[in-house]
Image (cartoon, rainbow, N blue to C red; front, side, top):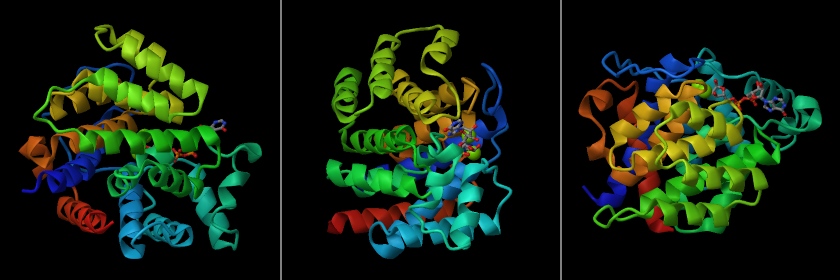
Length: 303
Ligand code: R7I
Ligand code: MG
Ligand code: MG
């Protein structure tokens, strides 16, 4: 298979697998569970990632009104996927007539959400705009604004999208350099908290103490306490998709989401062939997710 196509598919399938694996560890502290009982059911993270991909494909790019409608349609079909409180509130506001870019500004006392919901679903943006950083940031933040108005929620989404794009573009036949990967990310971010966390990521690269990793990077539902942790999990185990994703979900906390984001980056780096078959075969709606990745690849080729 074409290597870029394999990486597109690896990214979206990898994200869904990370979500499905992490679902069972959500809210745990550190664990050591293995993957024997892989049950391929995923949560809101993948459900919304599918929505992002569906809308980008149908509109051949970003359309906020359309994407908001796709999110609402998907949510109403399967509201039991484990959505947090913010997105459903936004969906109700939009349905009652509030404009798609306005509703999210009303959450959390008018500050908007800094939850990781805008970042957990952003992988398709990283794929589609991997060749154009300015456009990648613009669309990563624009899709985030549907539900997340807080600038830290939006920067988390942009950072995750850029990590996917970088991983996608690395040629695996050369030695991988985590330091230059991190230097790119540090130059990309605007907010001090992300810059600080990315410095920590580098310091912790050879750290064996998972408690310290959780203490310093976080494993929470806030974007700044989970996106850097996912980047770290990928870098810590950059040679193996399986090791990276298992490491991520075993950190506990917001494990489905950190698993999903790690899986997206690692899958974009390694490609679909590197993802264990027993995980791929057990994944809910695997064929649909693969088709979305293929369509994104077709569109990206034409840009
Ligand atoms: O960000 P969001 O979609 O949640 C994603 C998470 C992932 O773990 C999924 O797997 C799923 O379980 O949910 O949803 P939001 O409701 O926007 O944000 C999530 C949570 O972050 C909120 O419920 C708050 O606890 C917290 N949060 C805030 N708390 C205080 N002040 C987000 N923004 C704020 C804030 O401004
Ligand atoms: Mg979830
Ligand atoms: Mg989660």
